[in-house]
Structures are given as structure tokens and as C-alpha cells.
Length: 467
Image (cartoon, rainbow, N blue to C red; front, top):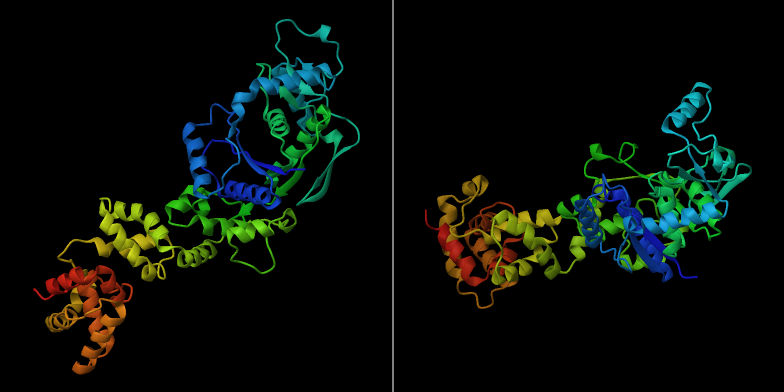
């Protein structure tokens, strides 16, 4: 059997971080088993579904690099197929027409509440002769659900779970206007797409019983279910906007790398011993449904940031430069040219050791692209005393004679100067940093000089000697 998983978001907003984890688990299980990962957009709620939300979901999945194996299926295009299945069930005696008016249904609900009974449809039209149907009323089609016994699910996360059939009423399959309900559409689409494993949040657990009954009524194989506990905030409550960003694209905009996000989401509810840093290739090799825990996980921003720092250090400098360039361009209010991209790439080895996110990386590399003369900030201005400027002028003359413009050679010259004048290296290096960057904090100043190159570095030092 080829494993087929699916991710089926409703396009009514951004891709929630919980949805992103669901997509990841489905993608990983498909990749682990050599199966297929499919995407279905459940856009049947026309009032709430938007093209903007569809685009946001697709963009977030693309950023997370969770690629589907086929083009996405849009549920709204399959209404005729859904209705066809409802009519098949009707013809087979597995469903029936219900002519109850909204007023009758409300009366049922009111009576149930008054008597302390669960609010359910009471089966008024389950066994009535259709000849008794009132004239001019368009019926709904309801599932003729089993009334005795129980419906059982052997869930790969929750274990064996059963519900008494007496607790489940005859759900609507087709509305009076001929449109399918969510329950019917999901089952038909899962069957037609060949889905073998339904991996989703445990808030869908009750749906699984009703959907199982539809599968069974049609004589179709019931997929394997795996209902994953939800993600909670640090306070233990269900993750929501009050905990901060809950949309996947927000973390992209905050400068997190997709591989760090995948690693973090993987560890939210799934484990492999004590391993915390799990690269995607390793995750594919290890991932199985048995590793998913039964308890809700808590989102921890500090852990995500620590993981991102790790992946920033591991990332290729050229890739980091390409990812940082748009953020930097926004700060500079202009695009970087080819030579500036080369400079940014050259700066990555020393810069990526310091930044926890791409946003920080953009902030910390901005000084490289400020025009001359450099405008020192308040702290740097205090460092650039007349004495410091005189020392910079002397040092500039010595640095101009360096044959190999490398961090090591430049450091040797500055160290030699500091020893001759009887100052610590920091007392000499800090004015150089202020002159070159306009700041008092930067990567090692010799790395900065090497990245700037001989001409630019000497020019900036020359500017600093002019009061």
C-alpha cells in the first residue's frame, strides 16, 4: 500500500502555526514512507474563503518548503461529485430525505434542552413514507446512521476510542439547496484522492466518528486516523493571538529560517529520545506516528530563537545574503547592486555568528552600505576624541602599506602599533570601529576592514581624521 497523506486547510485566514505543524507531520510521514503528500483547499465556505487567504497559505507552505506531490485540489470544484455520492446513499437506503422545517428543528432543540437531553435530530423522517412529504418543501438528505452498537476508531495517537451510536444523530449530507456539507465533502474527497492516513488536530476527533460512518455506509476503506494534540501557549491555554504571532508568515517576516521552523514544529509534540536539533533529512528518516505524544505541547519563543541561531550559523553565506538582501533593501530604501551583494556575501562569515534572525542580520550589516562620510552615532562620537582621530591618522599610514589585505595581517599591524604606544588593543580597535562603522558594536574590526576592502576602509579612516 502506498501511503497518501493530505493537508486540508480552510482559506479563511493565515496559516496558523498549528496548521503548519499538521502540514509538516503529513509531509514528513509521506516522505518517510515513500508515499504521497497532497494538498486540498477546503473552500466551500464562500462567505469566509478568500483568494488572499489561499495565497497566504500557499506562500507559507512554500516558505516552509513543504511541497505537495500534485496540484492542489479545490473542494469547491467538486460539489457535483459530493451530491452524486449523497444520491447514491439515498438509492441504497443508507440515507433519507428529511422535510423538517427550521421551526420544527428549533422546537426539537428547545424540547431537548428543557428535558436535559443532548441536542440531536430525533429521526422524525427516518422511516416515514415520502408520500407524507409536505408540498413545496425542498428536503435535506440525512445519513441513516446506525442507532445501536458503537463506532470505534483505532487512532495512531489517541489509541482505541469508541462512541455509542445512540450519541450520534443522522447528520445532514446534502442541504436543501443541494450543496454538500463539510462532513460529506471531506469523506468523498479523501476517498477519491486515495488518502490512506488522516493526520490532523485532535479538535477533529468527534468528526472522525461521523466521517467513519459515512465511509462505512459507502463501503469504502476507512483511512488510518492520527489526531495530534493542539499547541498551547506558554500559559497552557490554547495558542491564540494574545500569545503573540500565530501565523506562519509572521515568523518568516520576523527573520526565522524555514529549516529552523520545521525543526521547532517537529519537536512540538513529536520526539526522538533527547534529540533537539534534527535536520530535515534526519527527520524524514526518523519520523513515525508512534513518536507523537498525547499531551498538548507549549510554544516557546526562546527555544525557537535558539534553534534559529543554530541554523543561522550552519547556513551557507551566499544563501543568507540572498535572504537578508530584501530586508536590508527595505531599511536602506533602495536595492543592492551586484557589488554590494558581493560585499554582503563576504560579510556573512563574521556576521552570522552574531545574529539570531535574518532581521537582526539586516540590522547588523546595514553599516556596510551607509554612504561616506560615516555619521557616527552618539556613543561612537564620544569615542572619536581628537586623540583617537590622531591615532587613526597614524594607523592609516601603516595600514596603507599592508601587502595582503586580510584580517590577520591587519590585526598584526594594529597590535604592533598598540604595543609601541603602550595601549591595550581594545583602546586602539574601538576608535577604528567607530570610524569604520559609526557604531561601538560590530563584528571583529579586522573582519570589517577585510570585508570593506583596502580602498573603502582607508577612505573611511581618512574621513575620520577630518574634524
